[in-house]
Image (cartoon, rainbow, N blue to C red):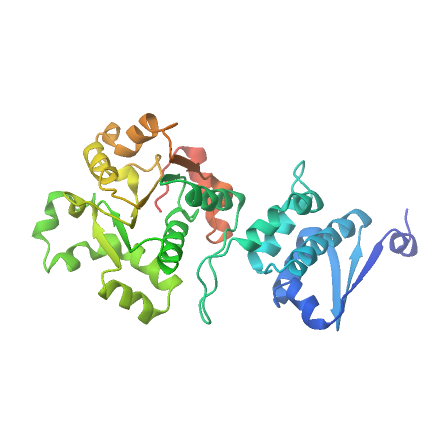
Amino acid sequence: METASEEKSMLASETLTFENPQFLQSLFANDLSLLKELQQKFCVKVITRDGWLRIEGDPRQVGKAKAVFGVLESVLRKGGEINAHAFNLAMQQELAEGGESASKLLRKGVLQEFADLRLLGSASKPAVMPRTSGQLNYLKTLQKNDVVFGLGPAGTGKTFLAMAHALQQLKDRKIDRIIVTRPAVEAGEALGFLPGDLQDKVLPYLRPLYDALYEMLEGDEAQKLIDKNLIEVAPLAYMRGRTLNRAYVILDEGQNATREQMLMFLTRLGEGSKCVVTGDPSQIDLRPRKLSGLLEAMELLRGVESIAFAQFDRSDVVRHPVVERIIAAYEKRGEQVSP
């Protein structure tokens, strides 16, 4: 039986010292809750004061926690930005059994890519950054291809990141306008019988797209872009007959576009345009299901030049942590999960 003194002697302690308190606090994004999370995940005790930080606990766990701070320090000294997402990524990679350690991740420069790939951002709106490896690959795919299909479950950021990339392209004047659309499947032909003008009729279906815009931009900035017709949000049916030049066109909920609608949408692209289709093949509301234009596009367009497919899975869910567990539970039973 081990005595308290023997147990204490088995514990390790590492003290990390930095040039000033501000630099140290930047390593955990000035958020003490991140240090508490690290303590819980690594089963260590963290004490910090002034410009130093001490980690105490099992020697192996202390080493892992120290490696996390080593990676974060390297990223920060190379000009990267540490936020909650970068901090959590460093922890996740170090905790992953059989995965790449934080030190290997550092040598490959993967974490630096997360820190470098920032979109938008203002005094009151944080920059949009990838939070998972799947999101990082998605953004890199968007940069390299003219047509991208983002496929995966709810909450993985497929449409949100596409809109952020589109807004950055508009800001950089690489395109002249953004068009975001989605099919109003539930309304069907009854759409014309709903009260109000077009905006009133389709608003319930397009509201998530407006919400994303206002989350990324200042309120007045988003409205100005809409008023100037630099950003257009419209139902898919209103894309017919148009040729879209120097536009960034996003089709949300692509799994609910019919085969005819998908072909119509993809052939709207004009000179200098980019196109993104997001959707979840497991959540098709069309009946019969085989009529989905997304399923047909996935079959016909793989391997076509300048067209790419980015696949997300449950590990890319970036909503509340419990959402991933909910999706897993429903998937186990074979149920669909709404976005």
